[in-house]
Image 1 (cartoon, rainbow, N blue to C red):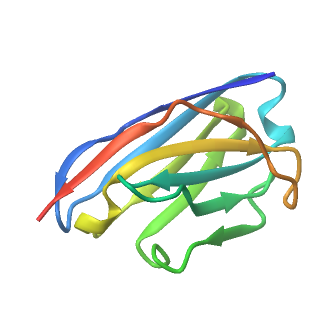
Image 2: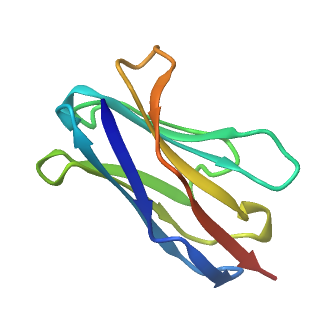
Length: 119
């Protein structure tokens, strides 16, 4: 089992920045590719970003490319999502997830952290 706890959400004005963190415990964190997803009110959960175990491969949703940066620190069992130039449409609950490999389905999920961007 892997337990994931997100933090860093909050209320920010459009154009501002936030950094989300996701702390993992349980099985070795470095074994898992890590994702960020988000779910806005009334919408389905959507993919935001993914990072491979050694940070060598990264993928972003088109909607966040150039604004968001995913990173990880395996020594701290933490994955981050730096969000810049935030827009009201980025308002959502943000979840981190762990997957066994790049192409597997996410196996473990955090409880989510709320991000609200005001216009």
